[in-house]
Length: 271
Ligand SMILES: [Zn+2]
Image (tube, rainbow, N blue to C red):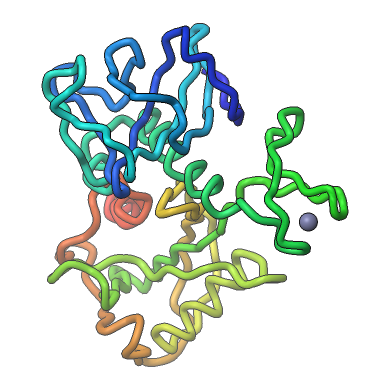
């Protein structure tokens, strides 16, 4: 499979579509797939929002937003179409499939958020060589934007610090997280975010792994670090609780399909 970005479409040949309706992904329960073949789909036309995201075995793969179209799940060549939340799909898809459906979501977001030039306000055109949105005003190319974030897991002897974000489901604790600020290194973000969110100083910052996070376009970079000094004091707005947990007695943590889940579990298996 080759990742590409393109807008042209040949309706006369079979294409694969990843369809979004009101931010949910259309999924076929029988075939257990979100990749739907246009030969079995009943579109009235191809005028809806779409962007080519990859090519595989001479098939083009498109992300399509059919939120405002008269597209009915019950009127298709697929017999068991349902709408799934992307966050739910994270729990049932392979990493490769998740990358593809996440790419579809991110590139639809790119299409929707890059309609007009930020300098002159003109409608942007698509440059098929650069595979990017383009404006003539100062030869400006707008590529899909990715926002880097860090995850920070603080270690202290046989304990790790886990926190509850105000938006988390009841009872769930995870590593600290924050966006990288302009001009900052990821390691500096770890130090700043930890201090802002729980008032602790940390050192010995080590990279663990990364994960694309398509809600809508983050790249998560996970780090471990060691406690240096300070007493836990939560900021009370973003973080509503933070505690030291013994590694063999952890609360509910995110699943292993998420980088935060893998980061936390790596500390358990290290012991
Ligand atoms: Zn412009």
